[in-house]
Length: 159
Ligand code: ADP
Ligand code: MG
Picture 1 (cartoon, rainbow, N blue to C red):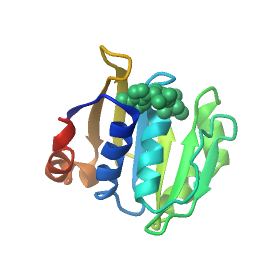
Picture 2: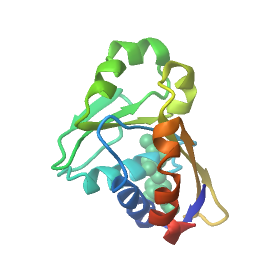
Picture 3: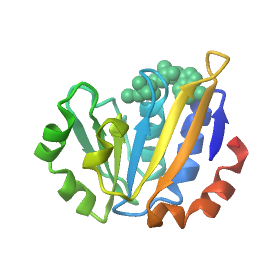
Picture 4: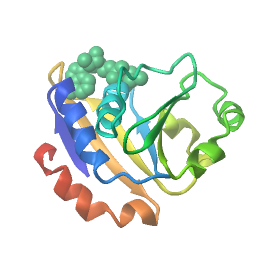
């Protein structure tokens, strides 16, 4: 599924619309270069889950946890880490077992083999203008495949 935004606010709004379809135990993998919008997307998602206060890039801390009014948010960034070993250290299995939380992993595409086969990959690439981003959603596994149609409807404004 192919989407496009033309501002950081639009990317946050898109993530908030997607948040409506997210359930406890879900995993989102965010792919794309530095500055592509992965953290901005996570901020929009978190705000829509009822997280109060700023969501900051966890690049140097690997993982942060936020309490939302609807769901918790586990926010990981595996850039520059010996990803597989580090992710096992933070207990990824336990995070994903938390059915009151959604887990978001920036640069998670680098560790796909270490991840469960049920996830939504969100890939960001820079578009033509400075603030344009092309965003491609790739559902992997039954749980997200079953939500394809709902995703298309919810995210139609950015298609
Ligand atoms: P990443 O986490 O992928 O490294 P960030 O979300 O931290 O990226 O940064 C994205 C940067 O790009 C921010 O400075 C943001 O303001 C800017 N930006 C401009 N246009 C967009 C857009 N359409 N979507 C997301 N970010 C955008
Ligand atoms: Mg980031």
